[in-house]
Amino acid sequence: MTDPDQKERLAQLEAKIEAAKLAQAPKPRVDEHYSAANLAWRMVIELVAGLGIGFGIGYGLDLLLGTIPIFLVLFTMLGLAAGIKTMLRSAKEIQEDQLAEQAERDERD
Image (cartoon, rainbow, N blue to C red; front, top):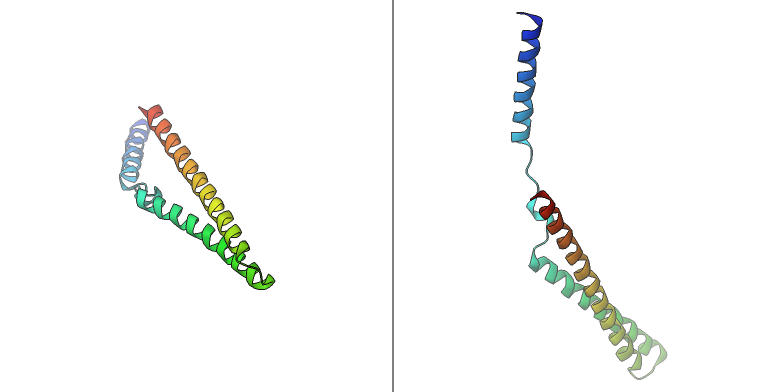
């Protein structure tokens, strides 16, 4: 065999190997994107956690200071506000991710 013939065969072999590697490459994971149910549960848990923490702090202060349940009501409302704020922040984050994915898809098309 001649030297150019060997180089040509080597290039063809490398192309076949590269094609085989691409065919065997792992597919992107589908579970990286959250489903709507997962996102809804995340938001519910954030709201309940805010309420629970506020309730716990308020109850503890009322118990510690021996007051009427004013701190319980106050901190429960603050916990509700914090939970809602966290939910809104999560929703905004999810919306920004979806818009970025949509823009990326539009660029490819």
